[in-house]
Image 1 (cartoon, one colour):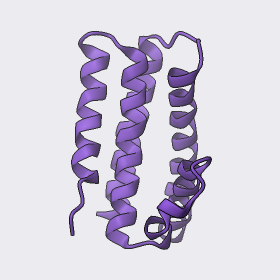
Image 2 (cartoon, helix red, strand yellow):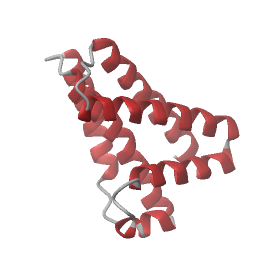
Image 3 (tube, helix red, strand yellow):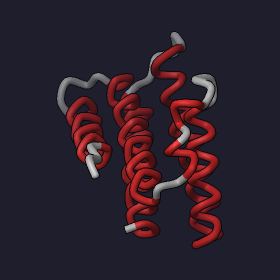
Length: 132
């Protein structure tokens, strides 16, 4: 099974940290933090062979991330209700930061970058503990 999502997850997490601590490109760091987690979500759905993964190309482009996130929440809830609550809270916060960083004129400073990177690391640990 060819699955590059885990590799992309790791690369995005490293890029997020580099952009945050090196050149101080905070919006780009937030973007990479979000996509690191989203790539891990895709990896999980591919390895679990979920219907949402198999049908992802048929999903409306609008809201496809929300669908994947909600399906992941439901998978976690079956295994760990407390973890599911943490996942959805942190993922919504990270996505909100990414949308702001990518599409709005608000300046995202180092504190926003650090918070987003912290969420990405927390979500990575949570997902790995539940699915791997």
